[in-house]
Length: 178
Image 1 (tube, rainbow, N blue to C red):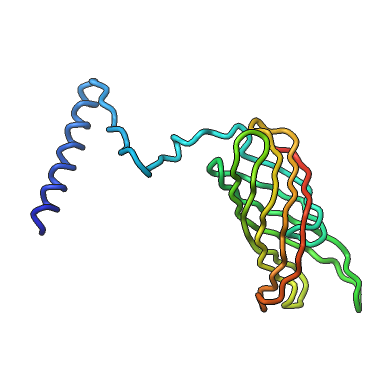
Image 2: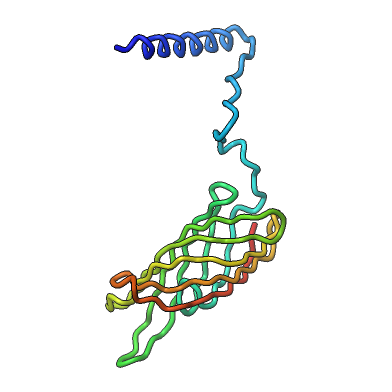
């Protein structure tokens, strides 16, 4: 084994043993502070008072409409899942279920935010053209402590079987965050 690696392992083991002994003796030793720089622990991020939201999206990722649930696991990053159901009559009538799934980053302080993300929309149509990759970019109004939520997003629809086939699209959302 490399001498430098051996010394690092021995030093690390010594620190862990000394911390264990200090805690066992009731001296209340704590873990060393994390190094300064780019390292951030999730526990050190500011906690959002409203990490969850439910909203109705008109247009947008579900093409017609969807009811969505969103949860942010860290303050600036959220996952969203939704569902929409509507009749579609072209050559014959059928009920279509649309499932938009996405991840989004929310940037900004206070009530006004920039939102950017992306995801996929899956439908129950047997048509291979009815599955989309959807980038999202736009404006979001949401108070840090929750309450009324509004989103206005540009959501172009890229067909998954031919990403060169794109339809410009947009959506508006109204809901509640808690």
